[in-house]
Image (cartoon, one colour):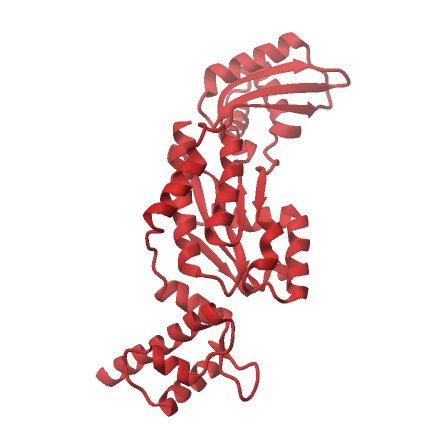
Length: 349
């Protein structure tokens, strides 16, 4: 048993060394380079034997017969789960992030835009921020204004944003008096609730209290079934760093680069990937490596993503995307630090 434990430790050490060396150099890693990095003194033959085992198990690949090995997605997953550590970014870097995001007491939208830029600058990858979806924002005040052609303007004051205007197209007409009564009811009953929760509660009351609230609830229910209040609108996506990706390590493959740029053009794909973070039961940094990504065009890249909060409530996601050969520890630490800072700034805004 003792021998098996020592051998397993040796295997982990060799695999971790290969991942680190490949991230640094970008070239296949041979037994000599591994031997120079290991604390344990091992012969080249022993190292090559372990490398062959790891290759058979899917952790390594050999680009050419005479070359060393390169890590696969499975090796990166091992590294992230068992080796990579979250460390402090450094006092100067943390100071730069804090000053960049807090400067001028930015409005929520400005803060999220700044966050995508800072994520890109500090991690040396592409920065992504998915803002709160309308349905997740907390109602402060709402007003409805009658427009022509069965349209209603909803003026929504919410947290963490300030104010939004949404046009709702309806299949029936409302008087301004009916709209005022509906808005007064929502403001009195549901201040501080998310629009998603309000919608569910309205339909629940419509079933339980048909006689008492019949007319008023019907009007509210109709407004929540249509247009911008129906709960279908995604949060705003902020992307920064795409102009610099040619300079990033791992983007040398032109075909892969074209795939990434094509995916950036379809923001719905990026929103879907970031939304996976919000749907997960995990609360911290989450990592999608290579083929773990649901979009086939993104399967040469890694997403490092974390949720951010408004007063303890998850409202959006932020992170970075880069090649699978990325500096994982720096990316993980950066995303974790920025997510906590963004949550604090957003909640105190």
